[in-house]
Image (cartoon, rainbow, N blue to C red; front, side, top):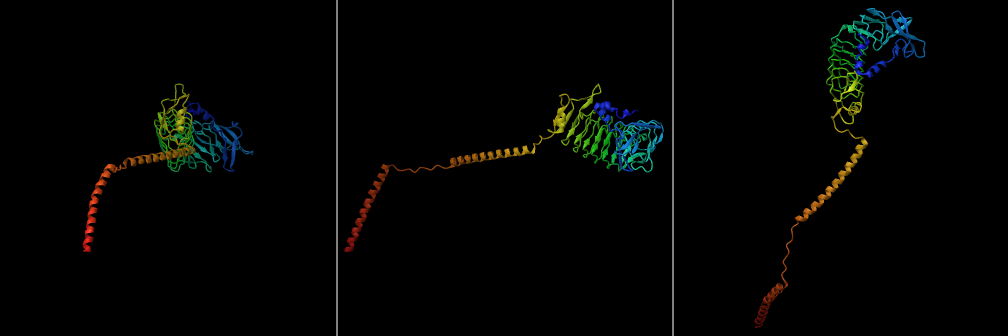
Amino acid sequence: MKLQTIFRSTSMIGAAMLALLSAAPAVCAEVELEEDEIILETEDDEPETFDSGDYSYSKLVSDGSDEKAACIERYSGSEADLEIPAELDGLKVVKLGKNAFVSADYLHSVTLPETVTALGDYAFVNCLNLMEFRVAKGNPTYEVKDGVLYSGTVLERYPLGKAPGELVIPDGVTGIGDVAFACCETLTSVTFPQSLKKIGIASFSDCTGLTAVTVPDGVTEIANFAFNNCTNLEDVTLPDTVESIGFAAFAATALRTFRIPESCTDIGEQAFAQTNLAEIMIPKTVQSIGEKAFGFKLDENNELHMDSTFMIGGELGTAAENYARIGEEGHSFQFVNTGAEPEAPAEEKSNTGRIIGIVVCVLLLIAIVLIALLSGKKKKSAKPEKKETETPAPEESEAEDAETGSAEEPAAEADAEASESGEETGDE
């Protein structure tokens, strides 16, 4: 198996991934010397190498100083139980380069000297027969537990020769180092401790035996290529603490469904390219989505092209809608609005509120006027009509007066006669 095994998905995931890998940090670009805390740097981007026995090394120099150290770039020997030297040509060996022991099938065990305090990105990738790591006494950075290499609470490298199947990572581990389990095809399941905070770059890349993964609460980042090309990985559960999903983190997996946690804000390029996903719901918390992150599959030419049937759910005005609308070559993905209309900016909200208030006031005034008018009409129609008093005709009135007067006259005369009669009686 070659080095390309871990990255065989580069052809599957497109040229962009290969470009990213080729742009990896320069070998031995930076290393810390524990004794005097000097940061060493390479003299050039492509450092000159020197041969010493079975080793090829580059020289490291400190900034503004003549102090030098060595970084092992390659090993050409075939020692099964290898003890890496602490010095080469009088230079202290402080680091192993990124390709120092790639695909070293002959390795059964390897011992790091007390001087080595840094490992290159792929220093022991694809060493399928490596059963254990060892560390010389006094090394300030690394230690070994059950043959596994640790740096503090970070599990740096797992010896693939142990051929783990169902693996339980010990409590207290806070990080999985870069390429820690890469190319471990025997691994069928992994149980993470609740103490875990970080999963490193390509840490489980090409673990083709993995079928399900549950990431515990507290992990905030799924790094680039973390589970890339885990071709049988069908079930992944992420906690609501994950904030970012890296470049090609789940590319070329067997995922059919996936839930993006609402804590997530960033999704890298090709993160879910070449999967079995037919749709994805993207929460409004996601602020950026890299190119070809969803809905892209390989064609007959092994190139990524968009799947026009892919469906994206999300809210209007979010990164989800923006990603769906962009598509490729003028095409768009199917987009389903899962939320309410996007909220207007504060200033627009304020103006809209004022306008609504004015309209409501005007409507209220109109309503009051209409009510008043209707009320007035009802009162007028409900008022009873007064009956007119009949006024007797003038002739009838005069006749009545005449009759009354004629009746009153005899009475007056009778009174007068009675009065006179009385007076006469009195005189008598």
